[in-house]
Image (cartoon, rainbow, N blue to C red):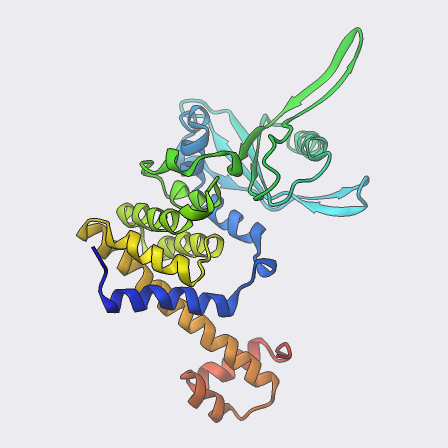
Length: 310
């Protein structure tokens, strides 16, 4: 079944407008993953570590302030991605869940995780459950999730962490998980090049069935669009995949992408206005070209008094 011309134009608008705003080098991986995992923290645990999720009292979550550590080996400051204090259901005891989102493969990362663990344990004196989400595309080899210190007669230390390596997970295994984190992270799993349009359609189909509030829907749909950017040929295949879905599923996706396209359009207007401000064009001219109001442009000028040059 083919989707209508209006639907097709709406879907195409997403691709065109988003390409104006982002390139792979500009993607803020840390921010995207922190927003996703902090917004859907329990759902993240339920998807990947249900044994731990089942022990947590959902209303007990307390997100702790970012922790900064000086890395003496690499000579730079490191920031803990996510540290959450949780309470075990039925008990007064609390423990910490430490999550790192790792967008590149790095030598001795297992050692760094141990250093984080040791410093956090020293500072908080609580049990800590460490988790790493490896989100890079390559390499495909299994990442080391242990750090040991041992001698012929004694094992002094054996530290391990939960490793979730997305490029070793098959997206098809998560198709029927009624979970918003699955809808987002399928876009970063093991995907054959020819399956990219289908995976994007499936991510949005799953998202539509969850019926989240607009803000959370935009968070996930934006995440998917960032990591599954389609070329014109893939875009056509994506529209065909959407056309195969049931009517209610297709309508749900169109509600998402209509909001998505509007957000992308507004972001494009703002970016164009910033560039025009950098060129010292009159505010009235910028308003006429971009469709933004004079008040919006004046506010943008206050927030960004020295916009980047084009």
